[in-house]
Image (cartoon, rainbow, N blue to C red; front, side):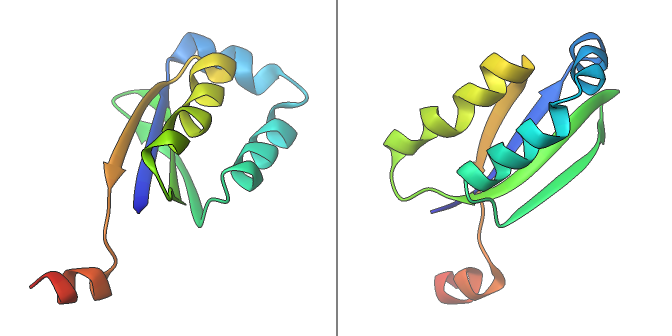
Length: 92
């Protein structure tokens, strides 16, 4: 099932994060690890926010997807099931 994974990082944690010289490489490694179809970076509510589109075959993949965001970035993490237009067409 396809999910939008949204990670929100506080300003304080985000400031430390971007000063880490390995930050971009670590982020790229995460994107590859979860096999993200897309990755977006933006501000939401005054915080740095990342959104990844990932396909999770089963619920037991959720911790492996979320824990690096919790532990390495100190992020608040949300999972939202999403559909493509073709999925919506089938549903209605």
